[in-house]
Length: 327
Image 1 (spheres, rainbow, N blue to C red):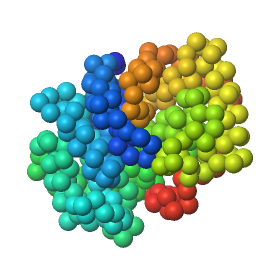
Image 2: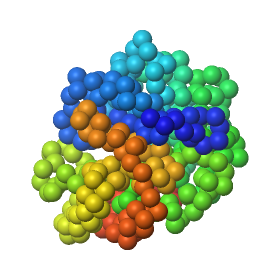
Image 3: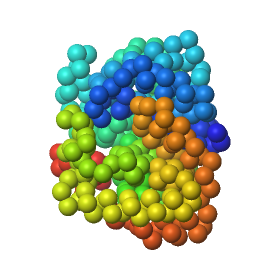
Image 4: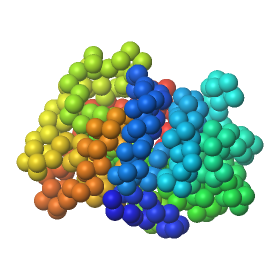
């Protein structure tokens, strides 16, 4: 797999990473044996960036990754996140971007991961009650202490990115970006990242699985799959979005690739490092093959015609989660 610079701070990663959240939370039943095998296969295929967070589980996902990397920590670049507070027992307490909590949660993540450093440490969400400069200052202290190598933010507005970057250089910003969600191309985020030399990590690059073409009805989701509450998977929104997926499927068939591969290759062509989440080897292998797909200018034009900005019906999250985004 191609190795590319993520941002301008000397951090290099495989062109596609792996999101681990679904291995422990939010997407129905889990299978640790298959999850560990999927992480093994990802490393074999050249994936280097493995993305987790203390909130996935909570804690279970970091602990899973710690077990996967036991005895071979150098085999991967570990990204995890802070800023959403949990007690040590896993009780959710809300957003907390205070320096005290960031320091405490970093030490806890290091224990759960079984490592002495985090390669990329994100502020998972900006705490509206704490100036971002204070939160980033705490992240910078962790870099100085050797506990963290690089820092980033998740789901942030252009002005927040600029304020944070002035305190300590950001290596990456993680945000939702896909053929279904192209808002950062129009709200100033993408321009700000390019101007400041900050890398873009794209989560949900397959539209939470919609762009895989495998979802035909939300009734197939498990009872505890959070997509049952996602506006884009509900009612008329679902059927309108499915029509878009059918157009993406047509373009993929013409190119002799799968819809997932087309969507991921497009994201890579846009300069992002996508971190599609999967908990099964067969989907991982399909996704990684997207790094070998070439997206031509003609392909870009055809994709823009069927999946322009704003094409998806419905908000990105349920209302209570939309309020957590720093817009």
